[in-house]
Image (cartoon, rainbow, N blue to C red):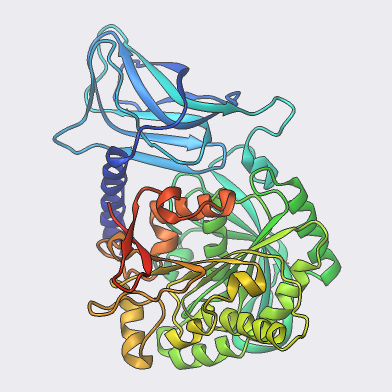
Length: 504
């Protein structure tokens, strides 16, 4: 397992650098951020920028002195995100004279750099060359504002990990509390509970990790020999049960304090084969990698968290729509929240679509649907019948005021299996049938975004380009997808319908 994870990591690093090479010229003007003196030794050589306030969309390097060969670069941002840019073994980044490199780590969303670490190919002996690091700057934070976005989320200001608050609403049965750090920690199993339980967890996220990954100890017996390490793995620092007033107060305060997503909330609905703790980790990973600093809530229905429980999970997911409706109503009541974004994954789309159809039916019959303050609704790999989503056709925007995005795939092995069991899954793209297209939902075929050693079922949260697209979607609400992000190409069918396809 460790070897496999290592291989996966190497593949991801190589893919990331290939994406950087394909990226368009970054926005902004080039400004020097700092100079690094390359002393003797292979390094790593690190430039820290604790007072940097400039928002950049890329970096580039230049050397003064002799030639420098670089194997890889790590760029740490104020959000806690770390980008790894690696170069092929036979073709390291070579800097000669005063020539600058091409733009590296190009992003559509501006970031504040905190640290740049350079790993050299050859020993820096002789006169110590200087390495100038420049950023493509498009703006600057005012000194009166909190500098790192991570501070707005309450992350740790230093160290090798950050802490994220993740609120939760679960229909699971509460189990015996665990004890961690000499205090009780709430625990929930895969059985259906008596009602909806609200609470808040604190999830630690290691700063040095690849975007889209959730590192955890590979085998349970590892924990018998060492403690979980927050600098290497996702861990739970706290899991508390809250009453409704405390739940609302915490969310409202975070929504008001947010800088990037002011007065917005994000609700994540997990899919099949997900334990309670894993649902918290997944929500934290999405929030961290999207730099979402508003309140994040995971709706955790009673999945047993095992591969053999597909039909059990399908029934409990379908039966949790009432609890999800209650959560949406609860979040919308918060006076500090103006907009609610939802990401539903896999089987978690079942209760969400049922709630949406129910509210549409109420409005169509002349009734008053519950206020939900919906902004963006993302249907990620929906493991639901096409016919269920088709009943929302043209009604998501007109009836509920929300915009929709559907990520579908033909390389999703889990959905392919589900398609055999249950037929015509909304998130599956077959070779003979185009993806599901609805008038007010942008359908994006991410088949080609899947990569080696992946089941293709969580591409939306694992691949850098898709995470960045979510970040752009929620922060700017820009449409159509190809104007938001150039990796998506419009595909026009003879019927006049259009969808988008991921193209490297």
